[in-house]
Image 1 (cartoon, one colour):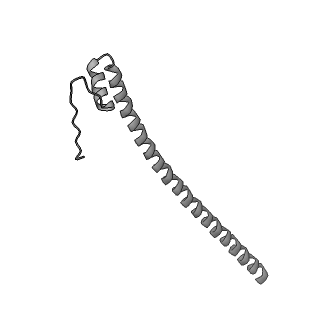
Image 2 (image 1 turned 90 degrees about the vertical axis):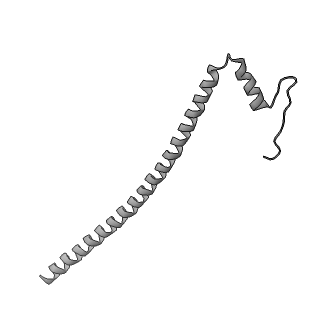
Image 3 (image 1 turned 180 degrees about the horizontal axis):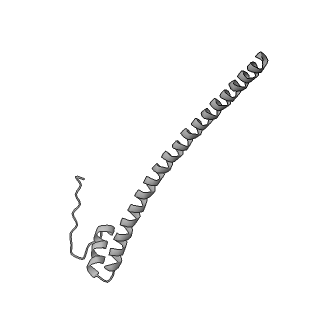
Length: 97
């Protein structure tokens, strides 16, 4: 009977070791998955910020399109974007900035 007890004891040790190994593997996998989730959340936040920026740009472009028949709009663009002026106007540059 003692050999039977030793066999059962060694079998329970093997089963216990197998369970410990499985738990360690599962723990490592969980840490890996949580890392992936964290990375995905960071990516999601960055993409959400990009979407919001694009939406603001689209709104500005739609506003510009709505004003496409306005000659004052073109004058404003020529002044602000191209640095142009009408005949007879003087342009002063702020050299302090």
